[in-house]
Image (cartoon, rainbow, N blue to C red; front, side):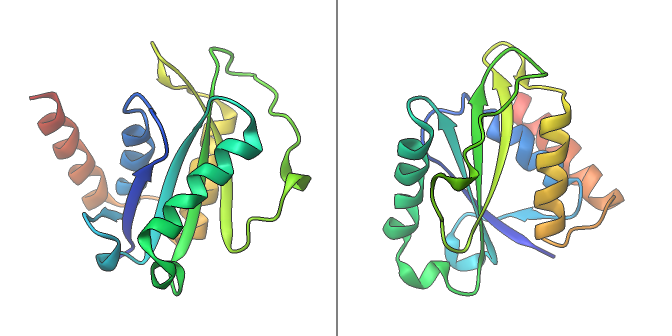
Length: 153
């Protein structure tokens, strides 16, 4: 089982939880400390310039300490604020090499949450593959449903 420690590098309006639920449904477990994890996911809302926000988010790794990065998968989810499900992301892959960090993009909007779109499906699929999670986990699905119910209370 993959144990994930997650952090937000800014205000995700709580929509990072929807992304995590999709991973829990695939068999991942969210843990409370980086020491317990074998993967770190940083959710980074893009609010100013892409590269500036990404570099700021990566500073979380420095806060955790250099030993946290070693032996762990590090994933950065760049969260782009838009209402357009067909939003074309700017080509930013060549803007900098973020050594050892797996980068994916997703789209969200304050009144809709994570958008139901190709970009987000691709992001979840890429993270699932990177973490070597199952395509479907019945026990993960039930855990995600329980977490969702308890979050509503």
